[in-house]
Image (cartoon, rainbow, N blue to C red; front, side):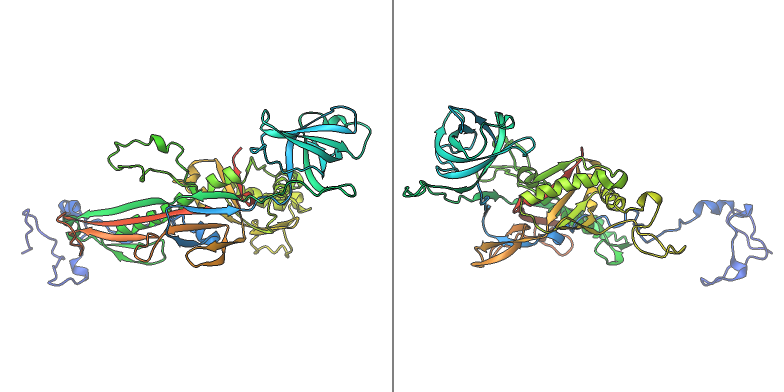
Amino acid sequence: MPISNLSGGAFPPSLKPMPKKQVVQDNYIDFHDSSFSTWTQQYLPELYEQEVERYGNRTLGGFLRMVGAEMPMTSDQVIWTEQNRLHIAYDKVTVSQVGTFPKFRVVITSTGNPASSGIRVGNTILISDNSTGLVTLKALVLSNTANSTTDGYTLECHAYEGSALAAGLLGSEACNLFVYGSEFPKGSDGMKQALTPVPTTYENSPIILKDNFEIAGSDAAQIGWIEVATEEGTSGYMWYLKAESETRLRFDDYLEMSMVESEKNANAANFPTGAAQFTPGSSQAIKGSEGLFAAVEARGNVYSGFSAPTSGGSGALADFDTILQQLDKQGAIEENMLFLSRQTALDFDDMIAAVNGGYATGASYGLFDNEEDMALNFGFSGFRRGSYDFYKTDWKYLNDATTRGLSKEIDGVMVPAGTTTVYDQMLGINIRRPFLHVRYRASETEDRRYKTWITGSVGGAYTSDLDTMRVNFLSERCLVTQAANNFVLFKGA
């Protein structure tokens, strides 16, 4: 007699249940059989324990680790000085004919300190037109007088050459000039006044960054496992701290993103005092901080609208040569690193490739045998132009859809691969530091570079009666961008 099931039906005579979890031919149930339609509602889902990494490595950090360093400081502010230029020059000065040539007048405006001129009586100067720089005149300075009306001073000069002022030198703010020496007659007095170097001082203040992860005790009691591969390169099964791991990775990215994006708070005086998260007093104002982009825009070089290359590379290459001319006027640092968005990186690749004489006819970029199995490399990791070397890489921060990839404003940044010698107050010696480095608050008893601690009453912490585990993160830091005049920020047109 066949075995009956709970619904009154009968199993087929060939079905024989086994006392153990043993796979044999006689205990196989075909759930597609109409006799077992009620079992079709009890399918267990096929559970994939491994997490799918559909966005690859999601972290964005690494930029500052490549180009900078981190160093402690004890103060609430970091101050550094930078040299000014050695030679004296002014742009957009006004040249006018006063009296009989070779005597003429030069008016310099908006010097900021009319009582102390950089040009002295006896200096020899070269004046050039502002538009082309091709029309020049050399002259001797006879007198200089402060002019409070123009916030500058007036030079009375004697021309060495020519019979009249060239037309290109006359007009409002039509000329540039620089000092190239001096000349005095025999038996004359020495040079009046002395030039005292005045370095330019810059400052920045650290900002406090915070984050946390929190889980209730009841949720922590129900363990759920998932197999993961973290951005740090490790893999395995994780419990509820999977979310804590992501909070930590996100906070790590915020540390770098803040150093890149931070702005000084121009509206600090009007900061609201009623916000629940903030109770600022006179010493607790939200001052902000100067990040990389803000520093380069204020004190560096900004280039907008890098062109797509045209035939022969004349488009983007002409743009790049303009950048080189600007670098010549600054520190002329030989080695530089380019961190670019995807589109700008491709424009650079095309710019270099277009210089190849056979590019238009489909010839290779380099030397190879044109074998059918050979993969072509259409990218370039570095190049040399003029006396400069450039090393290029993609900057993920500018491409990610959740960061600067949302905006087309920033196309890339050029960072000089150099160091400066400065006096370290903590070490008491002169040390060499990268142009770009991070300073964080630290002392013998408190290190705020990267603080993390657990509070609550869950997960081994017993600091309060709150039935949660709270993982806290904190850092206090700022970025020091020295010699920003050697940096270039590429912006969209």
